[in-house]
Length: 303
Image (cartoon, rainbow, N blue to C red; front, side):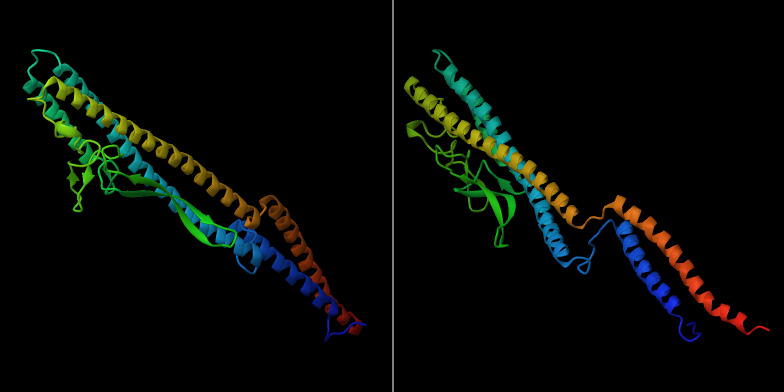
């Protein structure tokens, strides 16, 4: 039966067209944004996971920046320690020269004094971003190493620590006062060692041969402590480098994992878009045919 009040065929065609248009709109959104899951209504579970992991990745990006800053601090300290080792090696050579009979110890001391002042200059200059790892009071320096989310979803920041010690066999050249000034009476170079004093303060002008030998022993002990401190700084520098590489790889892995959850498959979406556009054209044609059936009734009333 054909009715002019109710066109069932047209309503069916219209419903089909609406469904196709909705699918076409979703597909176009996927193509334009690149996301299969762009909002919570698309897939609440995947959207929630992706949002959390993107947030964690921002934290890892901050960790990467902090590692770069930490690496700069450690590299500055290592360079200073390495330079100080060379200077103390020169002082050692001057002491050996002073053991020769007839050598003017006062002249040798003039050279040693300049080297001692160079050591102070190195310690004062070895600061990066307000932190000095070769001159300081006993305490702990830290570098942010990673951001962690555990199985219970608790988050925390982990650090790599470096404990400063300002004793004669510690790992800083000099100590530091509470006001931030270098303290030349403590540290590897500042701590007094017997009658000949510290490496930084000793003056060989009136030293006997035995005292020069004692000074050589003190310098050798200082070199041993400085070499140990340099090795420790080098180890931390290597660890920071490895951690930087790991954090960068981890960040890439998280990006890749999030992409698998929410990114659109562009080849699939392209094929779907073409199919839906064809279906849309056919649905429009079907609706046009259904609507034209009412016009055909007029032919029944023509004489």
